[in-house]
Amino acid sequence: DLLKKKYTTTLDQLSTVVFVFELASGRLTEASESFFKAFGYERADINRLTLFDLVFESREIVEENMKCAMSAGGIHLPSKRYRHKNGSAIEMEVRGTDITFGGETYAIVTAVDLTERRKAELDAEMQRVRHENFILNSGEGIWRIEFPDPIDISQDKDKVAKEIAEKG
Image 1 (cartoon, rainbow, N blue to C red):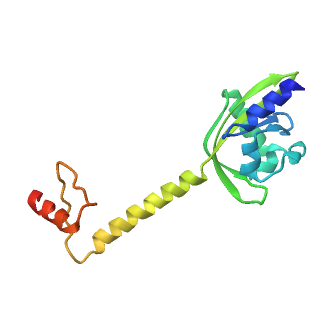
Image 2: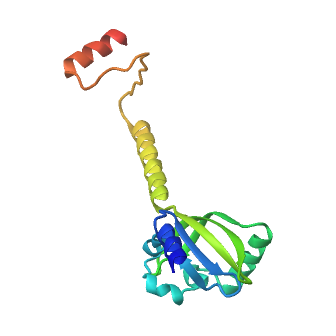
Image 3: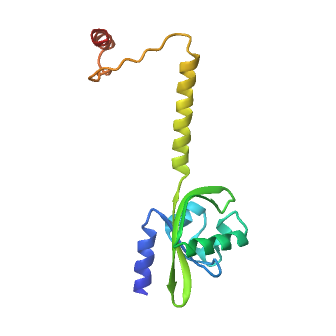
């Protein structure tokens, strides 16, 4: 039907991972194309997937956490590990809320993959540590000179050296 097609098309155009599941059973009912890309599943898998296929915790723990989250007005997990189809972990920031439709209660969840952010944070930390180690282990003095105006270092090296000597 036309309304379902519009809904699915809109959902699939989102870059954010979105999925919907029944609160009572954990059965997934809808998911965005970004969901399938992030988790490694095919669209045909949606009918057999449950929330419990996507998490590492036991069903009992997940159900208890869901009760607490929904009674508190929704889900917000700054960092949650999910299970990819291949068994690897995907770290995501998760938000969700419950809705009632046709007498059933569902959770609508949005998730942002934190993998690239964590890699960038790790790279920045490693660069900071390398810089710090370089400074600490340098046998020669290192000077830091701050000039009121930047020096264009794309110029000829002799011109740059002269400008530094004049300003410093």
